[in-house]
Length: 240
Length: 224
Image (spheres, one colour):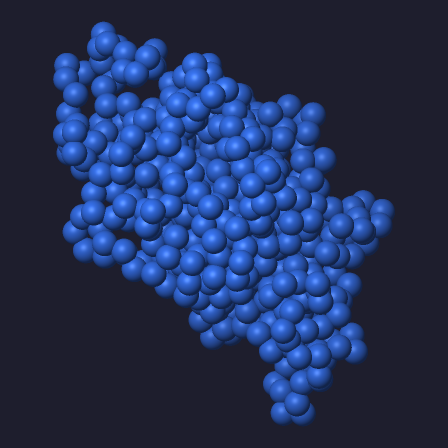
């Protein structure tokens, strides 16, 4: 089971009424780095240093952690047992409520991809639709939504991919992109890499060159990074 | 109200380009519906940027602290507007997508019902909110969005859509809230048809069809 330091900054408006007392002795949440991992709904915590710290490859900084990262990490809410028991869900909706942290998230991607001749930002439904368009607009690229089946009205290409149990399908409009274009794929989080892998396939099938995949959060224990057909992955926050 | 009715935006060439960048797909999701496909607008960087800029120019000084976007196409426009005006972005989602505690509001579809949810705590009482979606048809979805925000104590300043009819037909209305729309849906994709409201009715690469298939009462359909 994945554990993650939680992380809520005391300035977050959702926390404004939370207690500052320590959790009771019978809490099931283990300590980490001298603090407590607790569900956001109960307590507030000082922000832990993000574990996307310095010197990790393909993180937002090369030599030392960009100072914006820790606020971004702090703004992400962790929700245990969603969508089912045992899963710890990384909720980016709280990041979207923090105007500075959301702005910094977009800026970090834009700084990396501006001027790299990327003409396509492909965002995966639905949370990729939140981050992709602001990036596309800032770097002068078009935005291409990669959608669940039967949502796109025009002629589509489909790619099936595996879920933990069963399969799903991703679609893209065939005329959204042209062979030879350079693309970035964006989603909020990478876990097993199945979704990103399907998006890479769709774009490559029409001759697009996928330059990189970019996510706000990576769950490295699920090894999604290894399932991208050799495509590089860039993330801001790594959650272990 | 329409953007093009207002001083400063009358005859604005950006509106014409935005309208022309939207693809009309007949008989989607079902016969008789002329689907207004905004994905082609997202491929036109200038027209997409202009769309966001027109909304930002309007809302920048209205003291709006919340932009609520309706899943999923509201997510494509809302965050850029929110970032530019310094507001937070709140996704309004289909059931069971949001992981935290939610409030739900159901609304009526042509056949059956659907439901929109918002996280508890995302919006504080007294905040001024904008609701954004790509298109308004009957207003059912927007009405549910307004109710969610009002239940959380927010004041909905306006609803904004890229595409919509001049009058929101259908039983919902918008609880008296104002509606701001950039362009009307294009009914006809026959390039030889006369222009409507001064706007060209086709794109150069549209299919040529012999007639308009839309009924004046339900020319568009809201789906996600």
